[in-house]
Picture 1 (cartoon, rainbow, N blue to C red):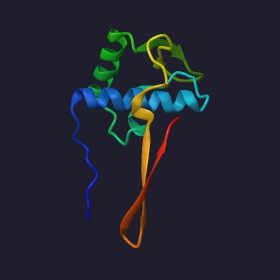
Picture 2 (picture 1 turned 180 degrees about the vertical axis):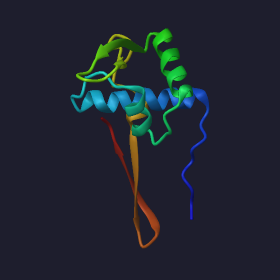
Picture 3 (picture 1 turned 90 degrees about the horizontal axis):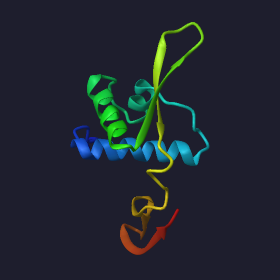
Picture 4 (picture 1 turned 60 degrees about the vertical axis):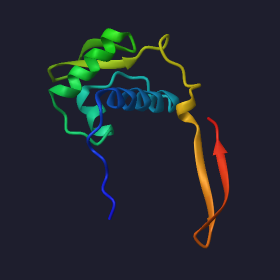
Length: 113
């Protein structure tokens, strides 16, 4: 049984975070995301390391951070994708699908989004 990789390098985690924000943005969800919600979307345990990664992305100018109040709760730090720093037209969004017949690869499809 193949296991799911959990350990990634710091730069790979940053790219995963930005890709998740791209997915949310393409679905029309532009509200601020908390560290907890970002961590759960990436199948990670929420901890201080994720907050450090997010603050590094804010320092690089790829994300924007802001404090906001929720009704009946503590103030929360929300992170939003910086629209000037990132676009969806990247090579990362290219997807290849292998078509196989009886276990033998007979073709390949390539999707651009």
